[in-house]
Length: 453
Image (cartoon, rainbow, N blue to C red; front, side, top):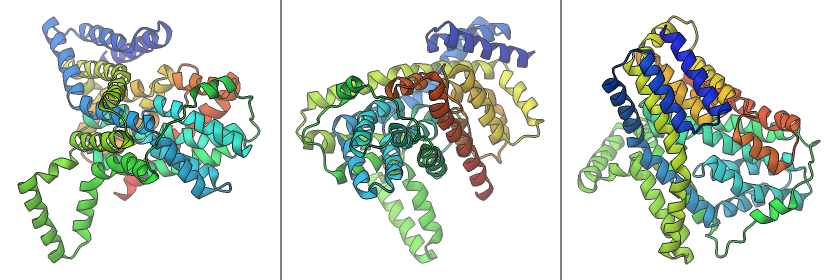
């Protein structure tokens, strides 16, 4: 019975979000209430579960996602993203242009959330296509595949950050493994797949192009642009590199390094800098100075940027809160434990299972964020009981599954279709296939790393 109720809950969620077009947060809460009542939870227990789910989920994520959004806004508004793109293009030249564009899209995608990144890079893509006379999809797919991978795989993006938090995964390791998985996924879905799309040459919407192109005065230097965009990666993965360094140094040197580290920790609390919340706060403060104050921007203008960034991410936080409420109902009703016991008897790699569940929900609902977070709520007991499963790799497996085959129920599908002025059929042949490649190659990368670690 719990399994049937869970399937019905997912179907109702799909119906409310995809067909009724009801607000996603409200849909999650309604489904959570309905599932709780169907499982005979007392009203007080049901209310407490929803409050606990929302509170526990948002408690740790609000700062991570909020600071991530602020950093992305500063990178975009200051012109740093354009500086990064122009420099990489000048290095890679015409022969390897698409590889340079993929790298630029990835670096820009690290701090920028997908929709914001899409809007930022589209004028760059249009401009490059016009100046080089190359087909627009051949130029655009490498950058957009990189943005998609960062959105689905890497914290501090909302879905992977939320999944990592619920699975108690280390954000630094998740980011490190995610970058390793991202490289082949972007290579195959970007430059390699993009090279097959030269036959598509849609007529661009010039009005749309010119309306988005904004001249930014006094942009930051190339070095500062790269430094600020990549600073969170360095800080979040610092402890991982530190542990690797300790393991390869001679015992005498590693002992001295540990003593120095202990001194810095006890005296200056230096270890605080690698905690995810504080490392992102540091990155935002550095960006405020180098991308704002040093470029002549006043604090009111910078404050407006930061305010807009948090406003833009608020709907995502509500979706995450709603998914947390549903997850807690799964736990409080015993549904998760029941499903976990069933899944334990399925002779299937848990990483493949996590990918498949997220992929199924993604195809049905369209939203990568909802797909990933719903899959976690279903799989949580299984993951907790399987100590051999790396939570960091499970984050990536679910994240890869959540990108599977974007089609007409996904906002990103229509964003791509309208900007590139494609038919629905051609959008499926290009965008949907690209997303599928990203998803499948991501899973393969996760399985390979799982064999190594």
